[in-house]
Image (cartoon, rainbow, N blue to C red; front, side, top):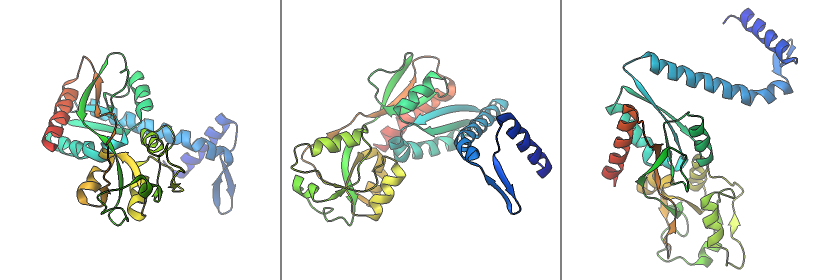
Length: 272
């Protein structure tokens, strides 16, 4: 698009909205408060346009199929990411559209018919017409970096845990519930880090930089545990959590979806 065309399109948009989006001055342009308020919605619209282009491109190529996946972060950072990489090499005619989404968002996507499969923990009540296929077991673990004072300890008391700084998840997240239960009978709560997050990238970054403890699903840190970057602390009793599985339509599987589900189930058996 040429600059005159872009200027004309912007002017037309401002007329439609009835407000100015940019302040024009001799050194250029700066966004107004209205433009900044609209920016997140515009970004979502552009993302939808991009997704639509991907879908149409796959439909236009009759030799290709597409499977849309919504997955929890614990699966993406664990086995799923590696498995999909291998899958795409073995099945180049199938395009995978992957997005990260928590359980609530996944249910919304299913209701809107926007995904073919959800990678999630077993729901108490699956959506009507969908079924849950167990995929890989999981559990909550307490982890720290290899330089943490407790890293080499074989026996750890609650007082040891109380003396450490913890990075916790937001209220309502299952790891936070386990943290609260762990210290519900303690005389005082442990010291908590200033960052509260369940985002995998944030948690891993802080754990590797600072001597912190945290409770996370083992699937979320499986690579770091194998590589020795993080260590799992011994506990008297494991902290249970629902296993990760595949939420799929109970009927009418497309050939591409059937191929993917079979591959993922096989990939865990080989991994285990």
